[in-house]
Each structure stands twice: as C-alpha cells, then as structure tokens.
Amino acid sequence: MLTRMFFFIAFFLLLDFYLFTSISPVFNKGSFSNKIFNITYWVISAIIYSIIIFVFINFNKRTPSVHFNNEILISSFMFIVFISKFFALIPLVVDDILRIFRFIGQFIVTDLKRENIFDIDRLKFLKKTSLFIGSTFFITMLGGILFGRYNFKTKNINLKLENWSSKLKDFKIVQISDLHLGSFSSVKKLEEVVEIINNEKADLVVFTGDLVNNFHNEALPYISTLKKIKSNYGNYSVLGNHDYCDYVGWKRSSKKWKDNFNEMLEVHKKMGFNLLLNSSKEIEIEDEKINLVGVENWGAGNFNKDGDLKKAMFEVNEEYPTILLSHDPSHWSAQVLDFQKRIDLQLSGHTHGMQFGIDIPGFKWSPVQWRYKQWSGLYENSKKFIYVNTGVGNLAYAGRVGIMPEITVLKIS
Image (cartoon, rainbow, N blue to C red):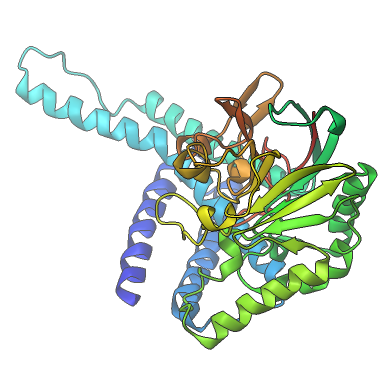
C-alpha cells in the first residue's frame, strides 16, 4: 500500500511541476500576481497530497463517521482541482509531443523545412490557453457544487405498456434513486425532496437503491423525514451497490459487515419502505393487480451480483403487468430483456448521469454513456421498457453540472 502511495504521489508531483513551470511564466516574474499564483498553487497541492497520504495510511482503519458531509466536500474540492489540472495539461502535453516528433523529423527527413519549434508567441498562447481551460473547468465544477447540488428537477414521463389494464389509466409512480444520504448537508434539503414527492399524490413510490455511501448510520438522521413520504398503495425499495458496505475493506464474513447489513434492512423498515430482496409483491388496485418485483444489486463487470431474478420472479403471475426494481441498468440487457417471464418495465438508477453532462430537450450527453448504454431516461426494446433515474444525491463530487438531481413521475396507461 505504501509503495503504491509513493509512486502515485511521485507521478502526480511530476505532472504538477510540469504544469506549474508551464503556466507560472504567464504572470510577469516577480509581480504580485505571480507570487500569489505560485503560493496558492503549491499550498493547495500540499493540502491535497497531505489528505491523500492520510487516507492511504488510515484506509483499513476506517470506521463509520458522523462527518460524512465534510468528507464529501473535501473529496469534491480535491476532485475539481485534479480535473482542472488534467484539462489544463492537455494542450501543453499535445504540443510538446508534436514538437518532439517535429524535432526528430528534421533529422530523419533531410529536406524537411526547419522550424523554430520553440516559437515564443506560440508558447505564450498555449500557456494562456492552458490556464484558461483549467480555470474554466474549476469555475464550472465549483458552480456545480454551489448551484447544481440541490437543484431538484421533476421529470414527467407518460408511458403506455402493452399489458396494462385500461382501468388503471394514468397510474402514477414516483421514482427516486441514489439518495446517498451521507452526502446530504442537512435534513432541510431532504425535506424539499419529500415535499415534491408528496405533492404528486403518487399511487406508488419506489426507491431504486444506494440509500447511503457506505454505512447504515448515514441514514439515521433522515429516517423521520423519509417516513413522511406518502402514496396510495405503498412505498417500495431495493438495495444498490453502495448499500452493502463493500467499499471500505470489510469482508462479508466479518461481524461488523453483517451487523451493518442487518441494520440497513432495519433502516428501510423504519422509513416505511417495503424492501424487496429478490422477491415480488402482487399489488391489488381495486379489482386489478400489478406485479412489483425487486432484486438485490446486480451489475455487469466487477459489480456484485447478489440479484437473483429467477428467485424474484418465481411467484409472478404473467396475467398481470410486471414492474422490476433493479438498481443497475446493465441488468436489463444482460438478463431482464430475454427472461422467460415478461417484464414490462424496469426502473433503475446507479449512473447519476455522472453528475456531469448536457440534458436539454432533444439532446442528452454525458461521459457515462461510454460505460452504460442506458444511462438516463426512457429506453425501449420489443415493447419492453427501462427508465434510468439519474439520482437525487451525489457521490465523490458534491455537485451537479448539467445533469440535475432527479425525481421521476411516471404516468402509466
């Protein structure tokens, strides 16, 4: 662990030195602005590297903490500094690589026109461009924390399902996902979410996983608030990958892991949510019925695969429409679409829309789409649907740029 930490820090220190020596000359040497830039750059870098060293040394000693919001703000600050430096480096590195090839080419190709590869005007332009790019990203990401983090948006979706009874026209389901309560700064912000939900007067409220970042006690200050969520036919939930406490180095066979997991199950009960653990519920609505199915987390790749679709669907009556709650949208194409029993609609979360992207009428984009084919909104295949909610909370970065925290209102007919 310490060896890995040493190489990690050494590598990033080299990049830091490279970026600093490239950008610092933009300010006149010895000027007040130059001194301020130099001091600020290295003080911030020193703080970040100190935090990294502390985290590396104490990683396996980590215990549940009450200071979750402080942690998320610190990690967010580190994230925006690193991402800003990364984008500032791009034009400098690309130009240096091109100049190296051009320099070598002058010796290989004898008739190649010799150029001044250290052209002063171009170097000044690149350094200013690098500073502009880095500053732009820093300001943008900082704005995401100040203005995007709690900018809750309601998305209204009208959906027609092939197997849906005409007697259940405009049946309303409110979906929330990825609360990550450890990242909330106050109960007041969550109360705003609950008020939005209750104003919809939903028939069903569903939560599609990731209640916390790691530990069950992140949710304790918010139980009484979440208990206020009302619906006509009940509130239902499933677990997400972060609800298993798998990211803190605890073995699942350990007592502390089992205790945390059992407490997590109790939290859902205290919230007034019916937690579906690879199980189904036949919901009666006057003289009609629908199947609501929930699986534990199942994710493609290295994500845990606790979800057991076969077990969850065992008692499902195909005479009625089926809605599946599954945290990870990759489950849809991997198992759900071709499952032997028809699943009309899957509701998922997990992606957060990467908390960064563009979401405007007629156009959506986020880097997360390179990882998840279904990452935000409604998708259809053979008259079967999946809706991916981009989450209410945040993780790692305490902000949102372009992809706002979402509360989904689905009207099904």
